[in-house]
Amino acid sequence: MPARRRASNTSCPSRGSNLPSHAETLAELLRGRGHRVTRQRTIVFDALRKGARAGKHLSAETVYERVRQQHPEIDRATIYRTLNFFCELGLVHQADLNGRHVFEPTGTHPHHHLLCARCGHTLVLNADALQDLARTLLRKTGFRLDARHLILPGVCAHCARAAEQTA
Image (cartoon, rainbow, N blue to C red; front, side, top):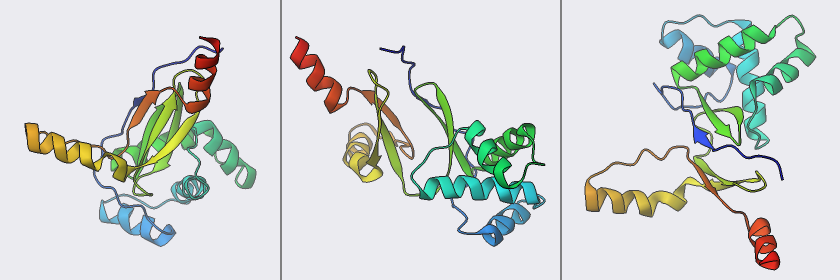
């Protein structure tokens, strides 16, 4: 069994959480915050958005590989700088899924991840599943849970069954 790393949210500072639905909206958001709209930024964001629509969380390397297929002139450093820039603006969320840094646009469907500590399998959990917990914490402690994107480690059903069979 491969070694497993702890899952963590490494959220970029968030200054907004609206997912642009097309390149014009991305342009509006960038210009509205005083930033230039570049071809590279649009291409990188489109790659992330396509990945999100397919239910994928993309690593910087995967974004690079996808972008490079159509735009070989865009180098790896541009991808990393652009992803970091999007994180700073709150347009992209970064997470560590089992030692793999992945990115996805913010404002997609709110969700969390259930990460198996044994096999590394990741399940998507609808954000509504934690609303009762957030309300209970607020009512009992006054604490406002920021549960926009969590990674919850545990053991998946397959690994739990396997452990029961060997016990």
